[in-house]
Length: 177
Image 1 (spheres, one colour):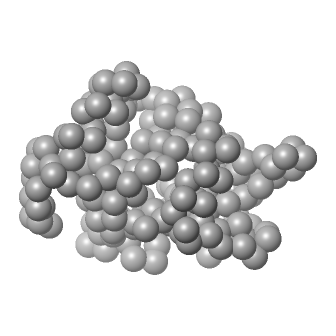
Image 2 (cartoon, one colour):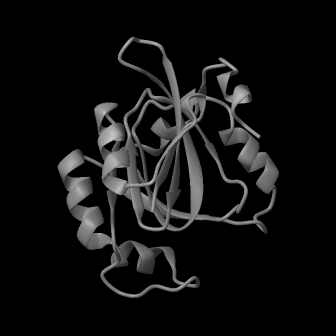
């Protein structure tokens, strides 16, 4: 279940509907998905995608997404610290970033604006069952730590659109451990 934090306000939200509503006011979509059949850690990408096809297919068709894949990053993944460091810097994408957490967890950080047009930094800990869609152009970064375990379905219109465009703002350095 997702957990949202606003570090500068020392505020944490744990109610899913409250988190969903706050994110929706900023254009970020959050919901829950469940598999239509049991899956295991050893299942193939195809089996995992099939288990969520009842959710995945309608979402992709409605929103024009063309492809989906499954990533599985864990402590034993080669070059795990290099992979982590790549995502810890604030960046944007020219395509929506759409993720469904099949297992594990990851911490999305967002650099948004509040009602007074001031910087608002929030993070959302996404866990098993959480589905998040972040519109293209949103400033964000992502942390695999401390568990270093993320198995997620990634959804794309065009995989090249998912290349990170780093902002060089260094705001992430104030919040990363």
